[in-house]
Image (cartoon, rainbow, N blue to C red; front, side):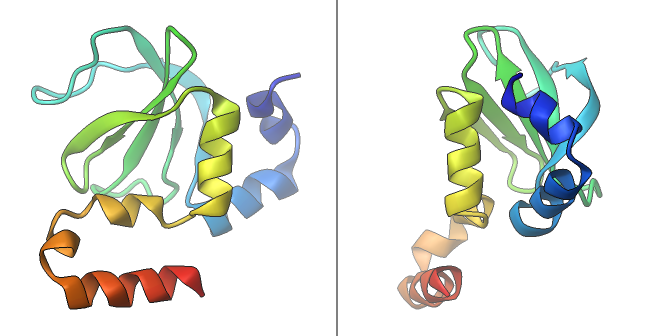
Length: 122
């Protein structure tokens, strides 16, 4: 059984991932088309999303080579974040706020960056 199946079969684990890691498995994998500005050079299927699912969200995409990509609508960026689902969950569990580091304005203000890092480390 792979990690996705384990999460789908464990409601408590799925709820914890939602609360602590801002991650939710989609009910079914969906073909990922990207947007006009964010496309991948290999096919992929969206399998996870940030649970708030408002207009500001992030999709997690399982690419054909089994690596994991993301599409972050909030910051308008996309990229590869892990070589496997295992690596992706290591990232989510160890740095649940990883998406916040995508905000480019954070790096333009050293004081803001330092405050943010202190908050994340708590």
